[in-house]
Image (cartoon, rainbow, N blue to C red; front, side, top):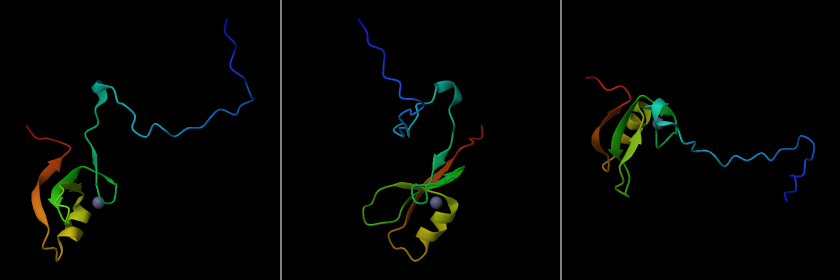
Length: 85
Ligand SMILES: [Zn+2]
């Protein structure tokens, strides 16, 4: 026997747990976010810029900022959302 769930008006539980929605493979969006300012960008630079030595992807703006007067800055390549063939 099943008891119906309690209906308390229109108060549906609002949960924001699904920040990372799994996309169907068909509509893959080739876009990445900048690791620094979290903006979506079509072009990202793979760089290291701090003592951790971790590779990060940053947008054009952030790349210019982190590269300035930074002895720890290392350039490791460019990522583009649109690949030319
Ligand atoms: Zn950025």
